[in-house]
Image (cartoon, rainbow, N blue to C red; front, side, top):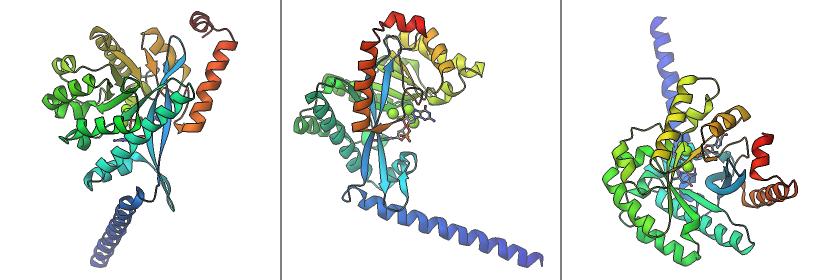
Length: 294
Ligand code: C2E
Ligand code: MG
Ligand code: MG
Ligand code: MG
């Protein structure tokens, strides 16, 4: 009986492994077709200046609308796309779409910068900057209103390379930010050599800001360090007033998170920004009166 049990367990594992493998293979084959089937879209999430309470930018976040599975999270398909060698084509689509959106918004008088995530694989491609220049030229987008995000771990893993590429991108007019800061292993010496504009504090340290003093200590230290290096600081994943209050008290510059808005499709974000600005103006709330009221 013990043997039977062992065999059943084995079969159970073998079976679930087959299911997982089949699942993965079908996802892979769907991902290969997703671009030509036009299944990707970009959502945008506002980045809000804490002092003026104005939307100063948006981050472009890719979504995959799978015909059967519904929305697939980028956290699951971006790593797969990197493995399959599809990330360049997808990253190209993202940049192009964000550039077109910026041009379209500019035409309607909406002035916001758009942040685009670069993957580690894209970052290692020698043709990256030439390629980005091509997209700029084709779309007519303004690089001064585009921000490129690279995670701290990618930047530090390829630190020497990052210094060179960052300088090239900076010379092209882009703004640069380090994403998910605090989760990687940073050398402050490198951070100082990167011509970056913004450090984005990872959500992990913002999540427990109001309850866990160690996380609060890290977030506060990152703000102080960034300001010491004359960099702007953005806090990711801000969901509550309590988090916002602590960040404001410690002079964090910008926030992004559900507290202000979830990522939304372009049309909705456009409405949200226009309405927010109209409300801010009509309530006559100067930055100071907002600060007093809050
Ligand atoms: P990220 O660049 O750090 O983006 C922030 C993530 O936090 C987004 O998840 C966003 O929806 C989520 N988020 C924002 N505010 C809150 C909040 O208040 N609470 C919580 N719980 N979550 C919040 P998303 O859109 O699922 O993207 C996950 C990751 O996938 C991104 O992390 C980024 O690393 C990657 N990614 C997304 N779009 C792209 C892309 O176009 N290209 C590349 N290479 N990577 C992308
Ligand atoms: Mg990002
Ligand atoms: Mg992040
Ligand atoms: Mg992330």
